Length: 315
Image 1 (cartoon, one colour):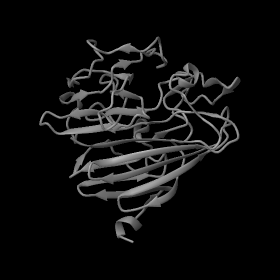
Image 2 (tube, rainbow, N blue to C red):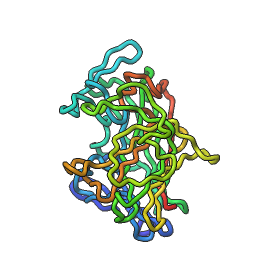
Image 3 (cartoon, rainbow, N blue to C red):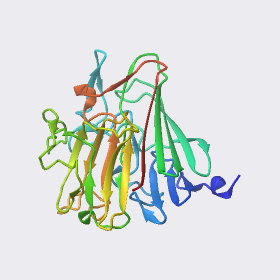
């Protein structure tokens, strides 16, 4: 076995798996199945942090069995009420699912890929056992991330998934970059609780229109976008680009119908890893509070498996 495959960095109970292919290098950790690092020819494409520390603002983590927020941690499914733990007390929401701070188990490892899995057991307000998996793989076009979820219980289960990906173009300041999104609508949010407020609205001709590249200087976003139109190959592409033309592209397949875009607050500093260079572009299968609105909520029958992919590369 090559040394790069056998080498696993372990500290404070967290395992880190270095990956490489051509000019691409990545590192994935066991806690939260997080993408801790991705670079191409030495240029960073994502935000990084120490593997022994908690990722800033959940950077790189897998969010399941729901992404984003659930109002009051409460939802009704199949006629049964459920009350989850409140994990965002300031806004009285349940946020980002149940697995982002847990250790995932190794399934398979190669020089350019790692596959991990975790069982979502029974929690307060969550009686639906699931097996969730993720595979990170480097190739000629960069990183491909494939997620799976299988209902291993005896009754139908609601499901949603997101990833808290922070995108960079090396160390280029975010305010010097442009952003282009393949998204035609945005969902308004209540600024106090960051929950949906009204129906989706067209972005065209508004301050939320990034269908053509736009400067990010002074722009503030914490916004779910949808109406994502894929290219002929089935991938929808969103691009952060530096003034010199270098760019980082995040693509999603048709299973991810939403992206949430988040910029840090330049006045309060809230939002580290910071407005300096990182932009959260988060693939999601559904919008915030989907278990209450029903919008794009997935339902897995007993034994059913769902799968979806997204990725990152240079452009």
